[in-house]
Each structure stands twice: as structure tokens, then as C-alpha cells.
Amino acid sequence: MSGHMQHSVTRSLGRASQRGFCRPPSRRFAFVASLLPSAGRSEPRLPDLCMERPDGSQTRIPEDALYKYTRHRWLVDEQTELSKRYLKFNLRGLIDVAVGVCEGARYCTRVIKCSESLGSKAFILRMDNGMQVVAKLPNPGAGAPKYATASEVATHELLRDVFKLPVPRILAWSYDASSNPVGAEYIISEKAPGVRLSTVWQQWPRKSKVKMVEQITDMENTLSSVSFPSHGSVYLKDDLRSLAGIADDISADGVTDEALSRFTIGHLTSAELWEGNRGEMDLDRGPWRNASDYTRAMGWNEIAWIREHALPRLNQYRSSDPHETPANGIALLTQYMNTAAYLVPQPTEGGDDAATSNVLWHPDLKLDNIFVDPRTHQITSIVDWQSAQVAPLFHQSDIPPMFKCSGPVSEGWVLPGRPSDFNSLSAAEKAKIDTDLEAETLHKLYESHVYKRSPRHWSVLSNRNFETLRTPTSLVTKVWETHNLFSLRDSLITLYTQWEALFPESPLPCPIRFTAKELELHRKEKENMQGVGAIMALLRDGGALPADGMIETEDFEMARSANRKFKEVFVRGAEGEEEKELFNRLWPYQETA
Image (cartoon, rainbow, N blue to C red; front, top):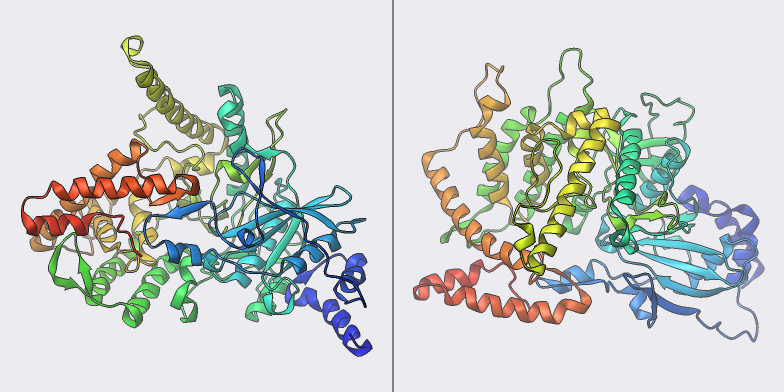
């Protein structure tokens, strides 16, 4: 490399923080030197490459396994799902960046592929001096990688500096894949201390699980106590100015302006607003000043997409003729737009308005995303804040996946118990009852602790009407692509039939109507869907097939064989060739070549 070229590299790295490329200055020139070729120097050997198993142990893997998604496989449209999660990057470049932020490290001895999320890849890089850091790279299907990376960095900073929550400290990052040595957007952070909660949860006694419920509800109380002025994703001001050319000052209840001086709120990073041809469209991705603006924006976005990209298609749950058309989708979305003003909780006189407060929330609070001290059972770190957003609490509030019971949950404050004939049951029946009881008990314990420890959150979580109000908006985005017009229509019919109960003091009638013919067609479609749904629920509850067609890799061949067998049995139950053809189309897991 010529002297002029070497100076250019160093100078460009000096400006890199303005482009989202950041590392401690003391390591900068050591990092640049590591990129310079040396006469006669052979290509360095790669470190050991391993993958983390679900139990925390490790196994050796080839280099190409780092770039692929290997945790799950899919019964439907597998190649599309895998391509969304295939990411080729410069491994040596990533290693050099990681070594550059580890004080005293000379080289990397091991790269460990962590338990994968659907939106990103994460690796632990272990150095010769024992230091370990985590590298996280967003998958192509995670939305707009530049915005996703910049927002996740800012969210970490906000959580650490303002909320004082335990999240890993970020050491370096880049949201500009074209100008960094990795060839992809990345975040390098400290390794979370402790162990993943998923590796110890099943061995914990009830007392320890209750303690975890308390810690989570306390964290959510902290988050729900701070209200922001708008709905969107969090960014550092300098980063958003580089990306979008504008970054407004923000304020928040309960936080000083000085504490928020580095932060701003901008576009949502949610993948569904960016992936595929949506990334090329001028959609409204925020930020929004109020919940009504967001509700309408989601509808207008979808109408715009359907007009540009939707094509007529078969809806097998209705009939083969006539086809479902884009006009059907736009007509239904017009119904949605007519209700949009009513899909937001109205402020109460003298009330807290917690439901419409814009708060930051974790997007996927599951066992894999929490690290704990195995001795004290205290949370040491909460990870994977990718796609976290500041949004109205009534859109964010829910039972976290780690506590949510998938079966029926009893009302009231009484914890569930065993049936009176429990002792007369078989061992398998007893085990099933105890498993279900544990899931329902954790669900109820979470609710009771939200009630006691997080009053603002409880005021939203306990309002059963909010589920009816928010469901239509949650279904609108990608409603055509996901073949979900039925669910959106069903949610609007629920609103239509429950209007007086939802708005008892409103003098206005429901702004939408459904004709008797429309309701009858919907009823028949529902019958077909529920018939298949009941069968799929039996298979899911029996562990034969998953609800979403996503299978752990080691179980895939068995699941695919089961899918073929169950489909054959299902189709054989039809009467006549016409019904057999219908049953064949209705089966949800249609294999593709």
C-alpha cells in the first residue's frame, strides 16, 4: 500500500464515526496496521469455529455454517425463509475489528456462533488474552440494515445511560457496509455475564421463577414510567442526521433534557415496512405524534402496496371462483380506514392516559434473551433489542412469551390447582396436567405482579377491550402478502358486533357495515378455516407439527414425514373428487420443490 493510500485509510477511519463506524481512538492505528499487507506474510489461520448448542455446549462447524441460518427449517417456502437469513461477510475483517477493541489482545482463538434469532446473527469472539466480545450482524430479511443497526446501538445507549438497565456495553459498530472491512452492518459489544436463562429455567424451583417474574415486571415498570413525545425507533442524533438528514430534539416525562440530548426518534425499523419491494416505496414509516396518525398510516401504506403489487389469486377457503382480487383488499382496507379514529383508546377525564403514552419496550422477551447469574438468579443482562420501538403502551403491552400460557387461563386471582381425581390418573396424564398447571401459574403470577409492581402497565394489560381495538391495526401491514384478509375482516366484524359494548357512551353508530351476504361468505370461510385449524391444533398439541411450520433442524426430517402422512389422511377424509381437491388445497403446509 502506498503512503498516500495508507494515509487515506487512516483519515477515512478518523471520519468514520460520522458514518456510523466507531471504535476507541487508542486502538485505531493498531487496527489499520492489521489491515496492511506485510511482505512474505502468509494468510493467518482462522481461529476455531464452533456453534453453541441449546444446552450451552459447543460443536465444531465449517466456515460456511457461520453465514447460513441453521437453527430451524421450514415446511413451507423454505428457500425463501433461508435466503432472508443468509449473510456472507468478511470473517477476517470482523475478527480484526473485534481484536481492535479488546485491550491487550493479539489475535482471536475461537469464534462461536450463538443461538440464532430470526433477525440477526450473533458470534462470541474469544481472544488470546481471555477477553470475549459479541458481534451481532442483522440478517438481510431484518428490514433496512442501516437503520436497524443504528437504532439498536442508540437503544442500548438509552437503556444503559437513562434507564440504567442491564444491557451489554457497545464497543464498536458500523451501519455502512460499503465502507467497513466486514462488508456488513455490525455491532460489537461486551459479552453478557452469566448464562442464558433458557439453559437453566427448567431446573429452577418455583421460588426462583417467581423472583424472575418480579425482576421482569420491575423492568417493565421502569420502561412504562417514561413517556416520549412520538412513536418511532430510537437513534443517536448524529447517526440519524447522516441517514435521513434530520434529527429533532426530544423530551420525555421524568427525564432531563440533558440526559436525552444525544437521542432522537425516527423511522420504524420493523422488517415488514422495509422488506422486498416495500423498501423501494415511499411508505410512511414514522415518526408519528399520536396513535391515530400511526393507525391511519398503516392503512394507507397497505393500500399503496396493493395498488402497485397485488395480483388476483385463489382463496381456497372460500371458493375457486371468483378469484380474490386487489379490489377486495382495498375495499376491506377502506372499511379499516373508516374505523381508524376509533381504534385508539380515548383519553379519560382526569385519567393517566397510560394506554396512549409512547414507551420503549422489549420486542421479544423470551428465555434466550435474558442472562442470569446461575448462583443468585439475578438478571445480569437483557439482549436482542433489535426492532425495539417507542410506541403507545396499548400496542406494546402483552404477556411476555416466556410467561405466556398457550392454553386456557382462568379468570380472577386464584392460582390453578390439580383436579380432584389427579391421583387416579396415569403417569403420562399427571405429567401433562402438571406441565399445563406450571404454564398457567406463571401466566397468573406475571399478571398479579404487574398489578402490584407496575400500575401504569396494569391499567392497560387488564383492559380486555384493548385487544379488540388494537387487533385490526396489528393485522394490516402485509395483510395481502400473508393471505390474512380473513383475519382482518374477522377483527372488523368483531368491532362491528361489539360496537355498543365498546363505546357505550358514544352517540355515533358503527362507521362500517357488513351485508348479510358478506357475513354468510365470511361464516363459510371461517368454518373451513376452523375445521383445518382444529386438526392442526391437535397435531400441534401432540407435538407432531408446529403452529407456524418452523422446525428445529434436528427434527425436520421426522416432521416432514409426519406432514406428508397427516396430509394424506386428511385428504382421504374427503367425500368425492371435488371435495378431495378442496381438502388438498386447504392443507396449510404445502411442500415446494
